[in-house]
Amino acid sequence: MHGHYQALNLQQMVQALLNRKQLGRLEERTALAFIVGPLLFALGSWQQLQKSTSPSMALGLLAIGSIFFTAGGWWQLQQALIGDQKLPADAPRWEWCGLRCALTQSIGTLLFNVETFFSWNQQQPNDELWVLLAILPNVIGSILFLISAAFGLQEVGHGRLLVFEPDHLGWWIAIVNALGCAWFMQSALSGLPSDLPLEQVFNSAMSTRTTLLGSLAFAIVGILSLAECSEDEIKKGQTSTTRKNL
Image (tube, rainbow, N blue to C red; front, side, top):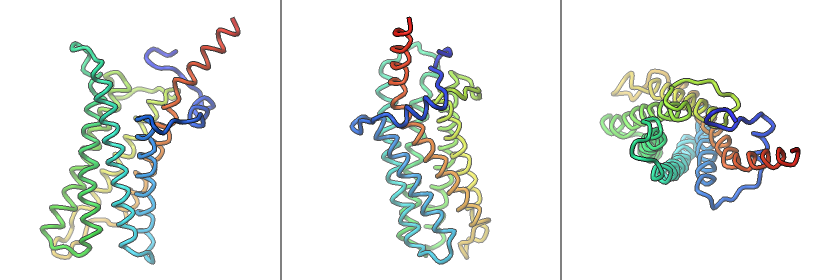
């Protein structure tokens, strides 16, 4: 045991991932949503980079992926609310970071819903609608994702923004999630308008590539979160083995 967390080596992390799952559990539904949604985002982004692919199909994958993102965000918020009900009124401020992380990320996913569905249904919008319903939701949603990443890092670090705990599943989740949020922010900045009347952006290819990278990072977060669902089972196994050896 390392202070506030149970240390797991790589083999134990893989074992936790492969352990049988109960899909009715809230945390496992959340993890699966954060695997499926990002993978659809990644596939849609990859198709956008292929010039021969139908734009409508790629945008549709992004829109559908955003629904899974929102479902995962909603279930994550529910988990945080349940956990915070057990906190005492005088709990350290960092213990509320889980709720703040889930809340800001959930709002961000809703904004991505607006952006992706608008882009899917209005592929030749006027300037005002493009800025209002595509550019702004993408930028604000990405900012909220960055804020949620900071809260997530503080939660896993017990108030510290940066810690080094490579044998801690929660630390890997927070770090890879922050990386994904940074890539989404880079995508939003690359997608800012450079010529409003022509609806051109600064760097469309970079925006799409960083969306792809961020999506893959979030898919890894979902896989790590699925492993974290069985973390307690690994702990119990370690305890049982230790007692037998005694």
